[in-house]
Image 1: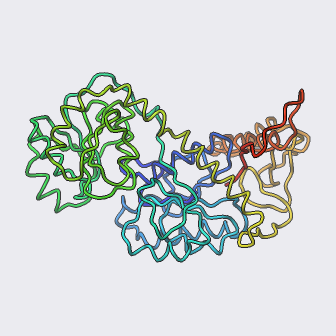
Image 2: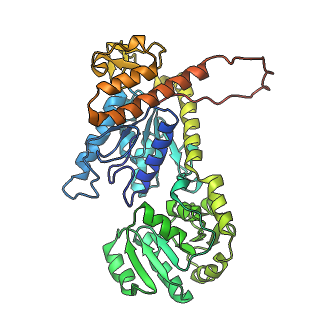
Image 3: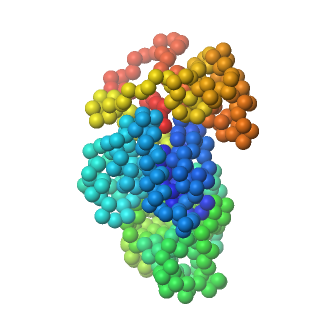
Length: 450
């Protein structure tokens, strides 16, 4: 899993790409999938973490972004070239596509939006070899072929549903002309409602000239960037989220997050907004740049059923649904890769991959039940061949340095679960005979991958 390195995974405050990477990675690990996450060293994950950058370059001006981006991407594809992974999933925009023909595994690339038309030549050049995922139908580019469209999902446990409406309007996003904070201010002024603005300042001149003059600390308040606990309270306490965007946004995490608390969204009907908002149920879509309609929508939003708003997210935008969609895509691509001459896997060296260090070693030893493989270095003198996986895990973890034990225990347990799942799905069903499935029916299977 190749993450961006502007911020850590998951981000402390801002970082929608990193937040999605975290949600997907942790969801896969929870299912027993062996995942290596390439991200900043301060990232927090249950996956195997591989890092070059100590922390996000957006947080440290002393880090050269291009230098660390190159080292970061190179590390991932050097391992991929050796046949270490079954799938490489890129969330790093266009640059990793240039490595696609050097890797031994299929390259999935989730396009989190196009920063400009100038990056399209790279996508066109590798369109035939990469498996592109759009995050909304609205963001599909006509020049490209896509393997799937997969909407982002969120962890509903992070958002408290509220049944009573709040007492202020909320703008939640980057302070940038594209996001329409200045329009939100105008709506608040015309309705007389209080407005809270939350987000990082991404355009200082825009903030200085079009936002700051209206911030009075009373009707118009600016609270800056907020973390998860404050985010939940701010979103849930609003009577409506104003998402009056000035561009065709590919997705809007804050839109889904607001609805998860029961807060309806008033949005200009641009980009992905019609895919995210059930107009008249989970929010209100108004014609792009129609300020009068946005003002009128404030009163209408207060009459929406907040339980229905939350239910919309529960049906369509959970992290579990997102993980399901990606698992189906991975399995489909792995099945195709077998017969695709462009995807022929290299012959792997003798030995096997150690479940503890995840390196391929010539000398490895399996537990008695075959559910754990450990190299001689990680075994630290323990003969695991006469032990079942659970006993072997306890013994291997017990010999490890104290600081490594917790992470190692989670890693080995995840590997054991993955091997168990593979074995169960590969085994013929036991018990009484069942009727033959109808022609054309198929059974989905989970294929382990990294």
